[in-house]
Image (tube, rainbow, N blue to C red):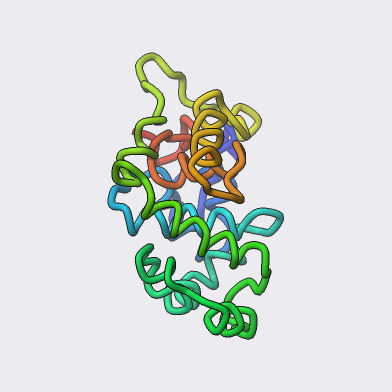
Length: 192
């Protein structure tokens, strides 16, 4: 292990410790996490998956992502917003996803809230991205916060607009996953 907390993978690359685990994590770490992501549908997918992750391992969600995409109509907010009791029953019976009624209901409610926004979801979410200016890259996982003032403000605004299951920790995870913040450790090969 390097002094910074990065871990050297089998391929010789230094990674954030969590990204050097199972192959699913390594791919996600190397190809997606911290990469700037835009688009209402793509961001709706991420906020939904982050909400489903609450209380679970991200690896669980990552491994079920394809099933989630199929079950939730490719995360098209307009289609998900039209889900009814038949769809709820279908989702609760789908072993390929996390079958939690409150989280399923939250996904449907959040799709409806996304459609009710006065501006694109992409624009709203990215309005909370912090100015990276002189921000120092974390040297160890202990240096990575669970929440920030920006994620707290995002959660508050989303809740005001009718979203649920979007607390400050979930919002910060969303910010990390979509490149609004880049928390790759200083010695990670992905550090920019």
